[in-house]
Length: 487
Ligand code: G6P
Image (cartoon, rainbow, N blue to C red; front, side, top):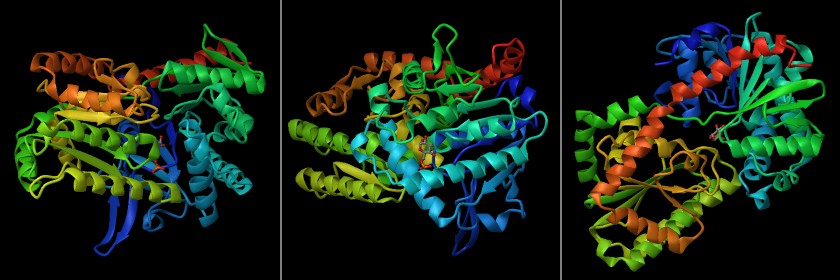
């Protein structure tokens, strides 16, 4: 499903991310492998299956060490090996200070507009540097003469510059999956200059939306005095030039579309409806359990909706799926708040035969997920801040029946493209509750019109076009370098 562009990188692509694509866990039934939660992982796995090459990532599973050779390598996918996974081992202190510390307590809240939640300790930065160095060294070890390096996300900001110090010529690209804040907010970032300097070791730096790309360039100019070329979209600093581009990530449209239309999904929907005693109409939200996803605000809006619209009692239930991937204190606290609020709403409005909110705390298997997408009269995807949000696109891809309405938070990167959704500000609870009512009472003609436009949008930019566009840009870089665009 990738075009021929992957061929240009055959055997020579090195992907690096914090999360690994396959993780081995010890269970009472023996060693099991699983695929971690997250759209990014499955997208990149598809690329490497085609191109071959190496993926460097943190080996975070309890059974990971048992599966690798002495160099931390193994061939994956386990059932059909196509590329090498090179695992990096983190000490307990690195896990605490680099991952739970600098990544989750500093960068994550800061880049999602939650400055109040930032907690910083100097040991976080020390381990962040150390871990980034371990990644850079492993990447350099894996490099062949023709390797191109493709780094992902905020965990590995320092890696490009570290590699650059050892190898001036190598093509290095980085994709930034989360938002990039405006300059005033970025000024609160501890080590803000080192983060920018690290990223300017890249030849190519990709963002989800033009706004994030713009914000990055403003920060580089203000904090480092970098030279910005707005027409060419480049940032020049310290004798190097980095190309800045926008590549909105997407989903595998055909895969969701086909699975949602299948007879087996129809059968599963019947089974699920019975098993959960669902009323005729349902709403749905699927999130990682995270304060950036706006789950508490959504629950407030639902509470107001049920209060104002008793005619929907017993006729409508809302399904909230919230999967916990991070175990730090803010996440445990947030989960408690979510569960308490759901219990309260169910107590206030629920009846013996009807639950207003149904909550699932664990990952849904792909076909169950698609069944819920297909059942949901309305999907409510309303993060407070989000780089893109692939759930919104997966929902649209699953609605080949032209039914279903998408309510989308304006702050999701996806809102730039999915303009035929009902856009809400998730903190305006009054308007939000009204939007839920509106979504449930739209005429079927209007629903269909909107859904068909949304589907055209997602079908026109799938995960495969995202990869193709990035690989295209990457293959131009050596030419640009020779053309003297790089100092
Ligand atoms: C976001 C980030 C990813 C990250 C994922 C899950 O989507 O952009 O890099 O992997 O969240 O978070 P976790 O901390 O569990 O890896």
